[in-house]
Length: 247
Image (cartoon, rainbow, N blue to C red):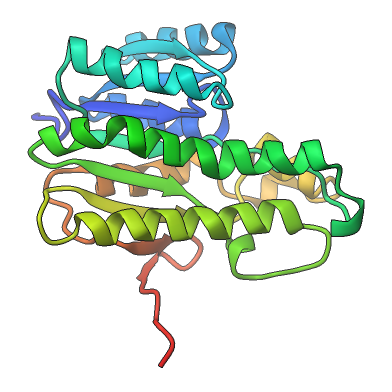
């Protein structure tokens, strides 16, 4: 059986756990060489063992996404070794404080924006030429319903995800007509992850779907035959959504 992503190079941030890990495994299972980026070396090594066990290949990149110079070096390293990048998955993210806006510590605010938004812009900046060098560059950024369903005490996270959506949609608009790049947003909804458990400690995790349920949907958006761009895939509803401009 041929693998639809055989020979393709995929960078996954937040690859050591949760949604990012599930996507990295699913991409490897479909034939992609996974460049797995996360802060924790040991967790990356465990991921590498699991990818090798299914016959896949991975390159491990221990990296803190707040280290913007490391992101720039990553772009240079990928260029030197492969000369292109076929797939970028922006899965890394932090919840931050669940607190009234007036009580949020400025350092915590900056951290949420740095990891959930700025790091993804730095990745676009560092990897744009590599994605353009691919015959079918694909980007998927993991967002959240919190960007749209505003509720009290979720301010830093909601603001960051709304900004991420604007970032991805802007990149999609800039690459829509003259390049082979497609840029998507994907909302996984409520999944059985450590972040969800922290946000909803009284919730029964066994009532939730898993990151492994969601990951194949993301893989589909990474294939060369994927044609949509600048849209949001909503996993709870299992449908693509458009962003309507105001009249």
